[in-house]
Image (cartoon, rainbow, N blue to C red; front, side, top):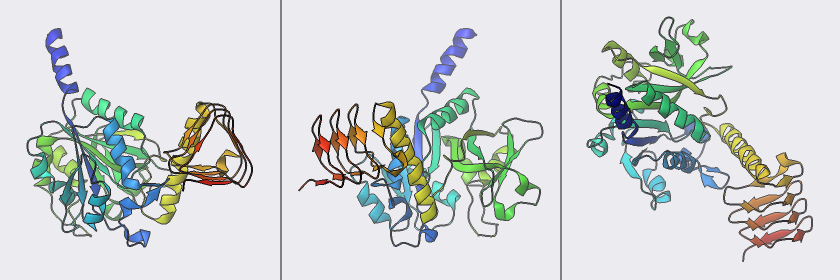
Length: 335
């Protein structure tokens, strides 16, 4: 019996993991002609951060659902191993996922559904989510978070007296006054058994205020057919930030920039007035580098050990040799 369980656990670990990214929306509140997922964060399109997370999770396939200005999105990521699926009409998140059925028809495993406008999730959180989903042999799990002010987010309605089991997710506009007091919210990230996913999607209807097919409704249908559905509140409020406006975009960039600075400080870099330094993920810094206040580093910048960069300097696509002292207000760019 023990050997059988070990073999079964190993099989569960080897279940294929597929990533589905929802990136079809217009992003109306961005007030832009550019698709929302192509807006830049530290010099890179927002969607690239989500795709990087999927790569780090070792998914066997990445599927991106596109809609608004789909060709622009596809062109940006044309060199990546990504399957693009078109959602011709934006009829809701449930409808968006349903468009992946043909691409995923031969997959037997777990489908990780994530939004293309959630670029600040950490790999550790997603790994923990996948691990807990599989440890509990779950067929449907939700990544949730606790928000001090949950206004506008779908609420996680828990089963009576249960830590992780839930009954449903209710959208803000459809929630009762009591349900709106719930502070655990849906981050829009799901793990679903591939076979069960499309069975549940067939049961969705658009009988709601928006006339859309909500992906959240698969929870109620799964519970109705006797499935245990789990919500794991592993995401911090910071991580669960969805980018819906220019203000949200600025907040997301600040979070990513803070992480980048902390990464380099852990590698032996000193930032004087760290909060004033701008740098991008393509920047490489050596040990014992000192960066003065208000420095900007963009593109492919490589800085050797023991370099001092003076305040208000601008570096773009350049290599700085070991031991160099850069005067304040310098401007170095590749020609």
